[in-house]
Structure formats: C-alpha cells, structure tokens
Image (tube, rainbow, N blue to C red):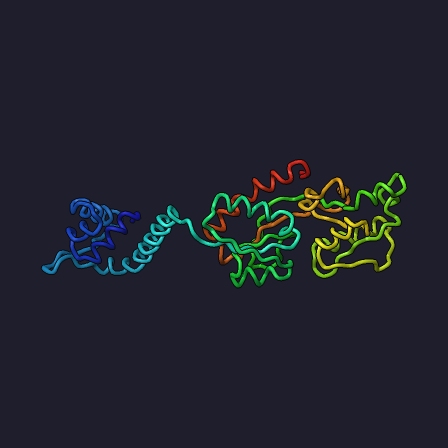
Length: 302
C-alpha cells in the first residue's frame, strides 16, 4: 500500500462508505473505489465487505488498521509541520559556547542571524566545556559550540573547522627581546600566563612552555583565556590562543605566531543525539560554515 492508498483506506474506515470518504478527502467516489481496488489487488485479499449498514472492514483490514493508522497520523503530523515551516517566523534559539568562542566569534554570528531572522530570539550561555553535557542532555540549550570532540555517548559532535594554535605576546615585548634565532631564545625571560581549570588551552600552554624551556616559576595563572589575553596585551607575558582568537588580535598591539609542533585544534557543534536542533537552531547552524570560512580564510591551514 502506498501513502495515498493508506489515506483512502483510513477515510473509508472512518466514514464507512466510499461516498463519505470521497467528501472527506475532496476527491470523487470513483477515485476512492479505484484506490481501494488497487490496494486489494496488490495485497491479494479484500479489505471491505458490503453490508446493509455500509462497508465493513474484513479481519485482514482490521489488522492493517492499526499499523496504517500510525502511518496516517505520522503523515498528518508531517503535513502540519511542513505547513508550519512555510510560515514560521517567531521562535527562539538557545545555544551554549565556551568563553573564547563567545567573546571572539559569536558576536559576528549573532549579528548576521539578527539581520536575517529579526523575529527569532536568541539566548546565549557562556559555559565551560565540562558544563556542556548537562546543558545539552537536559535540553537547556539547542546546541553547543566548543573545541574537541565531545566524549559523552549521548552527545553528537559535528566538526566545523580546524586550525593551528598560536603563541600570543605583546608586540612591544617581542620587539624589545634579544634578536635571537629561535622563539625559545627570544622568550627565555618572558613569563608564561597559564590557565587553571578545564580550559581547552591549558595543556597546549603547558606543552609550549616545556618546548620553549620557559621558567617553571608559578607566575600568573588565570581561569579564562580572555583574562590571559588582557594580561598579555599589557606586556606581562605570553600565552597560547586558538585560531579564532588569533584572527582577531590587533597586530599593532599583539604578535601571533603559529605553533606547527602542536596538533591543530578543531571547533565542533554539539547536540543531544535524542534531541536534534529544531528549525530556528538549524537555520542558525547553516550560517556557521560561511562565517567561519570568511573569518579564517587567510589563516586556516588544511
């Protein structure tokens, strides 16, 4: 049975006659009769018996009624959704992003989204990577943005883009350092601005410090990359930044040098496997590739 035959079959079940089913479906009685006849021919048995009270479903039809009814209800729901999509204007998108994405890239996305969908509200939560799981699984947000593939089995990760990490240092500090041949020599006396907690950049900073032979003194440790960058801008040391942040540094104040010895970092979109993003969230997500390409095209390494 095809979808049209199921629709006719359910209409005849509901009304008990060919003519009433035709009126319900806004088609001719002969079209109803032909659809039932074709279905019976394909199945190899009768679906209805004619009685003085009208058409009575055969035992076979009664069995089919349950499964075909489920399909018919799903088809009706699909049709309603399709109609709603054509007129859907208002709504809300709830998203979560780690701090570095919220500060560096998200404003561009929100600006473009507001231009194209001014009637859709947006709620942004800036959270750390370890808080992403609860926000997604409890449906607190529609999707999340973060670095690294999410380890939770019930969270789906979509790779958006990858790029190199960079060492960031104040231009004044870099230019006043001895003109040595290597980065390690030029930064030998420059403190490291380290991160604490679960910031994805923490281990990259520690690895780079070991590679450069930086002093092992405690120095300054902060919780966010945003604060680390502000301290770097003031000439208090160097730190490591992701590729999105590196593209937005002011070259008059900061020097950003890619670190080819470190593996690239990848930006992912997360959503709960059981709750895919809805219409408005999907519309926002479709904007991401183009905006990321525009932001990173001079800097992305394939």
